[in-house]
Image 1 (spheres, rainbow, N blue to C red):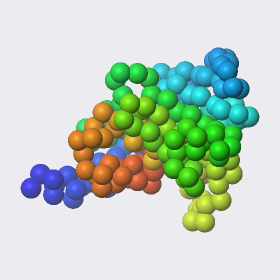
Image 2: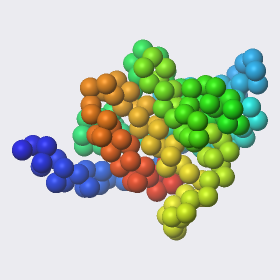
Image 3: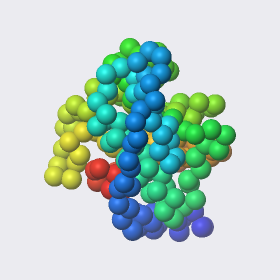
Image 4: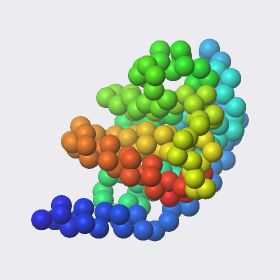
Length: 183
């Protein structure tokens, strides 16, 4: 019965608006293979290849804002990784993205089970053509990144919840996202 009551008010449970979190990225730490690393409060961001710093900053804002929205959500779904800092990796090209473990043909991917990492293809993230674009739809496909970031933010609960619920929550947050980290 309580599940029915929760589902009945589900569209209203994220009634408060969550504003984008302000993120200041310091200088990147350079690593082998042209990788650059930044850290925020909740994430380690990594760029692989020639990814504009503006894309990394946009992902940082999305990551921190998604974490805040998950914590503000009426259902207790926020459960980020506890053993290590979660990682967000953005790739300049598809081959390196797929070599890192992403599914062929995808544009964003969550790697759970010991990795706690979201993979994003920069070419899709920055240049997506969204057929259903409206005045409130972001010019880049930030909603795809939000979907994957929700999986990362629920990391510790992923194995205990049914897949339909996990993807439903991720889609709910992607739909509630109005661009630039605003929910």
